Image (cartoon, rainbow, N blue to C red):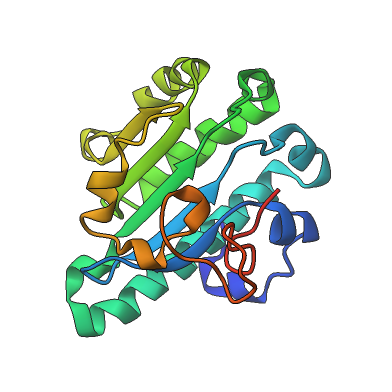
Length: 201
């Protein structure tokens, strides 16, 4: 369906390349790729008016394949555990209304099912921080489509909590983690949000 072998030849829509918030910011102490996704204020309504749902999901597959390749390269020196991903989501100002919009809801569910079908046990750990109360409503719906392994790797922390720092920094060096999220890293421009490494809205 996604023609994975030729994805790198695909000219992805500019909106996805420039406005989908993510960045591979480094590797944990076992060599696993660490991906930061500052999803606060992400306008999925606007995105799905700029690109098709198919292209949105296709681009996510492209990113997963790139992250997997990064993990594979790391595994050559760090061992097979480096092939799993550490993912950090900042969900401050999560807008449930946008995700209740049917095209957005269908896109999220299709993406979740696609992940579970094609990338089992890829996730090493997922930290979801600054989750407002309404986020739990959406997640309770989505988690029905996640298997037990995936659920065991997802940790959710409410808005304003910093309890995620201890478990995250037990295996991710704070010196590689953006300062704006509680780490110590600023990019070469002195930017604590590390926009040179992490796409932002």
